[in-house]
Image 1: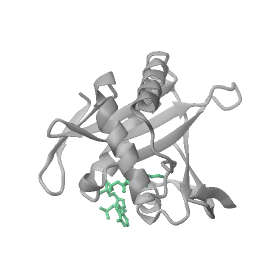
Image 2: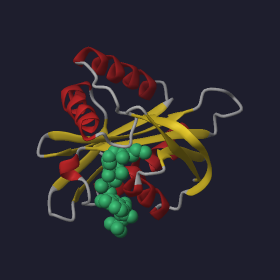
Image 3: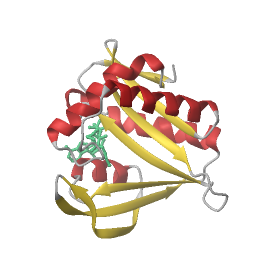
Length: 178
Ligand SMILES: CC(C)(COP(=O)(O)OP(=O)(O)OC[C@H]1O[C@@H](n2cnc3c(N)ncnc32)[C@H](O)[C@@H]1OP(=O)(O)O)[C@@H](O)C(=O)NCCC(=O)NCCS
């Protein structure tokens, strides 16, 4: 385990590396984001088979030093994940691509911030990346506010660059040197 802390509402949360046993809980997290029509990549529900494949690939990447995937666990349930994947090309290998998702019931208690800080610190140590890049829907105010709080700067954007349940939405790109 990497970190244990109490949330703003007093729940005990631990942050650790992804395990195969997280599969069902993370499938639930992902599919609940589809139900919410959240501003994330989750726009189509995954099957258990697809989630198993995703986790298996993620574990290989962690093993190979190509990615850091950390989860947040509370009361024996995995409620969220944050990932940084290293770019493979030699001209991009100093960059890590970031993503995060938490189940609704644990949001707004400081978990996203802790998880993000921890995954960045692990990526700096083990992936040797020098820069974190992320992309977000312009409408995703909670996420953009978290990224801004952690000193990410907007470095670009693509008008109507993302598709959200049939509608084109603006994408913003943020980055931070670490
Ligand atoms: C974005 C997300 C990871 C934030 O995690 P969280 O645990 O809810 O955020 P925290 O409680 O750690 O809050 C940290 C900061 O984020 C910002 N923030 C969080 N929720 C917010 C909200 N509802 N409105 C505005 N700002 C918000 C604030 O700046 C906050 O700092 P503060 O507490 O000092 O005000 C979480 O909302 C989530 O998983 N959302 C669904 C998935 C998603 O959108 N992922 C990002 C895709 S790009």
